[in-house]
Image (cartoon, rainbow, N blue to C red; front, side, top):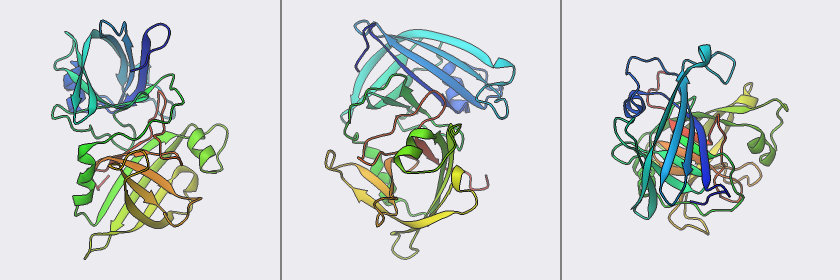
Amino acid sequence: MASDRNDKIIFVGCTPGDDLIKSQLGIKNETVIDFIKWDLTFSNLNSNTFMLNIVYGESQPNTLGFKNGGQKKSYQGEYQISKNNGNEIYQLKSNEFQTEIALIKLNANILHILTPKKQLMIGNGGWSYTLNNKSPDNIDYPLPTLTNSTSVLNDTSLEVIYDGRTPCQNFASENNLTVNESCFKLKWKLTLSKDPKTLQPTTYTLKRTNSRETDITGKWTIIKGTASNPNAIILQLDPDKPNQTVSLFVGDENVLFFLHKDKTLFVGNDNFSFTLNKRQNYAQ
């Protein structure tokens, strides 16, 4: 992991506050949490230490903040880097944690929190478990090889729904979307359908913030491999319309990451990541 001149690198983001992450962070289970704001600093890389500051609580409607300012906690400790199928796993240990917290490095700009079984944590329609480099570099990193990405090929569901919220301006600019200068997030709901006999991809329906009046519909397909990574799996929306195609990198069957036109990963900010999560409860 690269560091700046102060031998520090900071990852930021907002995650859900479900029971598992509350348990790991030593937060009482009965605490009502809509989301957790993370500020994770890796410092003095030779000694492998970290500092984590979080703010959490109930969200203040129509803002990016918390009711009454939220609650704050700080943690410090050491981390180790292990290898899992060629991927770097950052294992954070602190006396203030109930259990260690593990994150997989997708590239130098993006980390994703893992479950104790080393699976990608699944977020919700508001927040994901992705953390973003606060000062990302501009290197075009190849896509990582994630062994569980092939699980999407074995999913027999005839319809799946992914949703989430992403930053607005950089995606809008690259994809020629008309948005206001004040737009800071895009809200997404993606429904993928398959042929009931062949289970092959057929059509999709996309609801997005700036297209509320009309659903976006089209065809989708699964692409296996890119020029830089033959093992990557990508979902492409409208593959027959190059100017309108939206591509999503498959983390596994539950978590998708938005891609630039050159098939590199978008990097989010301290409020939103470029991640969609499979809806676990279709009644939502």
